[in-house]
Structure formats: C-alpha cells, structure tokens
Image 1: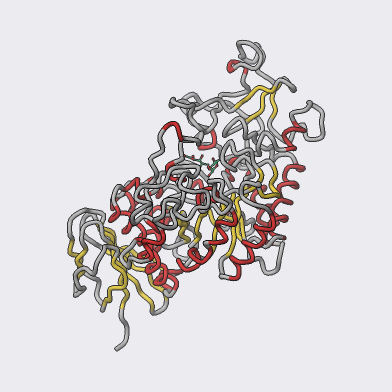
Image 2 (image 1 turned 120 degrees about the horizontal axis):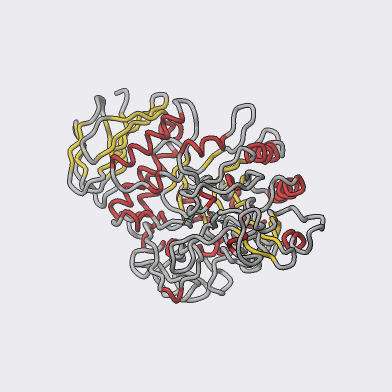
Length: 529
Ligand code: ISL
C-alpha cells in the first residue's frame, strides 16, 4: 500500500499554519503502524505555489515553506529505518513561469533555451487569424487549459501572449505553468538529471505528474470542434511520449543493479486502455505502475464497480501485475464525501485493499475524513480542490496537533474535534483507523491478497463477491453496496470471518454470511483439520 502525503496538509511543525517535512517526519510512526509500504510525497520543491507546488521553480531544492534539504534527508533516513520507501513527485510536463529555464527562454527568440518551451507566433490573417496581436483570434490553435475560469464552466485558452518575444507560449494548466518541450534533447537531459539528484538522496521512486502530456504532436493541430472545449490534457496522447518515458525508466533502472526503484505515472485519459500503453512493452518498458482513475469516478454501485474491475481484469490477464486502485487523492472529493456515508466508506476500504494490484491511500482516508466545507472567502485553489486538502487533525485539541494553532491554511474537516482525528480513533477499537489497520494486517499476511488470482463469485443483487487465491491461501470478499441486510450463500469450503467492516461484531458465519446494509466482509478458507 502506498500512502500519499500532501505536505501542506499533513502536519505543521514550524507554526506557520502550513504542513511541512518536519511535521511528516514526526508522524512516520502513524504511517508505518498503519501497514504502509511506501509514502508518496506530493511536491515540496521550490515553487511560487500558483498550483500549490505543481508549478516548480527549482526541481532540486526544498521550498522554505516545507523546510530544507537536511530535513528531507532526515525524513528519508527515518522512513527507511521504519521500512517505509519514499516516492517523490516528478512534474515533467511543465515548470513554473518563474523557473530560470523559462525566464531564460522568454528573454529572447535566440537564447540557448529558446525552444525549451512551446513558443509560437500568432496566426496571421492568411492562416485564419483575426483581431489584435496576442488576442484569442490569433492563438496558434484552439486548445484549452485545465482549470475552468473562476465562476464559469469554460476552460481558458492554453496559450498566453508574451510581450518580450511577441509570441504565444503553451500551457496545458495555468499560465504560470508553461509546458516544457520534450522534443528538445536539452530538456530531456536536464529532467533526467532531476531523477538522478533525488535517487542520490535515497528516494525509492517517483510519481510522475500527467506523464501523457509530455508527447505532443509537433504540428500542434487544432482539435475537432466537438472536442475543442475539453481541456487538451484530457485528450493529449501522442506516440512521441513513449520513447521519453522509456528513457526515464532506463535512468531509474540503470541507477543500481538490480533495479529497485519504481515509476508510477499519472495518465488522465478517457479509457483504461489508454493508460495501459504507458506500461510499454517487455522490450521497451515504460512505467512500473500507471494510475487508473476510472474506478475513482465510479458511483457506489455494485454494477458500476463490477464493470470497472472487470475491465481491468480483462486487460491484465491472469499473470500480470497491472492495476493501481485509488479512491481518493488531492485532486478529487474524498470518497467518504462522494459516497455519502461512513458505512460505504468503510466497505470501500475493504474493496480498495483486496483487489488485485497496488492500492494507494490518501492521507486522512484511514480516518474516514470528509472534505472540509471551504467558504468562498477561504478558497485558494484555482482548480476548486480545497475541500479534499483540508489539514489532518491529529488530536481533539483546538489546534489538532498543528503547531500554528487552530487556524491553518484551510479549514478543518468536519468532526475534527470529536472522533475525526487520529488520537480519538486510536482509542476506539471500532474506528475507521482500526478497521484500516485490521485489513492491512490481513493483507500483509496473505499471499492470496498480495498477489493471488482473482475470481468473481455469484452473489445477490447489490453485492459483489470475489475470491483471491495463491497456493493454499484462499480469501473471499463480499461487499454489500445496498443499504439493506443481505444473506449471501458461501462457496463450498469452511470459511472463517476475518474482517467485518461494520461497527460491532455482527452475525456469525455459517454456510452463509449475513451482511448488514453498507457492510463488507473478508473471509479466509480454513484448510486441513
Ligand atoms: O484536478 C483535476 C480534476 O479536478 C485533474 O483533472 C488534474 O488536473 C489532473 O489529474 C492532473 O493533475 C496533476 O497535475 C496538475 C496538478 O494541479 C494536480 O494537482 C496534479 O495531480 C498540474 O500539475
């Protein structure tokens, strides 16, 4: 299980109301005791924070807001001492507009980095352009950037006019995030050096931001009119990305023999099939893991989840280790909020941690946190994603364990003062936190759950059931998506209940299992005498 930490929101040790690396270091025991294998740290690099760190102005240094490189080294060392691997974010598609590379690139049309980014002249009248220089009618194509304009639904153009060069530059996200031109070998070499810098500091892998963005059709053609309103990052999937990704993989794989570092990439494209391509081939491997966000968008319905899991299983084939499973992250409403009840969130935890593949858990998910209500005057994210980035409450005091006091950069999530904090949940054996721990203990001790086969089992409407099997180890998972009690007949064999997600003990298991509404259970097959 890989545990995502959004540094701004985890814990503040410095007293400025923003989480930091030292705050993370102090809570490594919490993370390790949960049963985590690796932590993934969202960006903590130098950044003007237009996109809260996904706009990097120095890839090889820590932003003072989060601490310094010595604190980072200490964090890595202490994580390793606890058996936790450390994965850092790598943001290759764009830099900050304040990165020295961009500052140089925008300084003239003939500087050494003049084509490290995508610069284009405005369309002339002959090319169908209209209006004054630098205006929308002159933009090189009809692409749209990612975040809707404040208060509106339309996405802004992906081009911004620069008066120094009298040219447009491309940005698939904010105008403060110009896109790097990966067609330029200097860009590729510099970015590969970034991987080496962090590997030399002991990191075990990289989570790669919007990796499918780095290959672009050099002609930058218009999108067809029906697709033009969609942010181009959700569609851009050019074959030129694959050799670049392959080369990143070889940088990581050749760092040490045998290779022991990994790449997990974010691919936000329309189907799971699109994401599959970013694994590469046996001869030309690319990513070790690719996020599959389609299940994250599935409603809490047995049929919808069955489809999502089936789709992945079919692409995977019996032997592969393909899928990643994600219910929540820093870009989307938490699943507790999406699904609307604690019972569902608890059942979803069992689903996440027993499917075949690598589960990712977003800090706070192990407490069943809901998104914070963020009033408009406190909203800060250009993408409207503040709610899921609320600070993690460590205890029930007004400051919830944050050094900066009761008023950090975003409001607390609901219930922080009573129940929805780490200390309270530690004391409650029925808490979501203890449920996650129980499931993760079971997972770690079970070859079937870690890498066994997957098979659907017939089950009543509104439920899903499947077995996982490896050698003599067989586990059965049954999930009741409905809100009424169901009786589920068990496959032949002798089954023991291992984890029930509902509070309290619940009915005994006989030749059938009774699940309460919104409840799931993990069973183990008893073999021998
Ligand atoms: O945020 C989204 C939906 O609300 C996504 O579409 C998101 O833009 C997409 O998943 C890419 O996300 C990544 O790159 C962005 C950054 O803002 C996100 O935080 C990051 O996860 C640009 O770097």
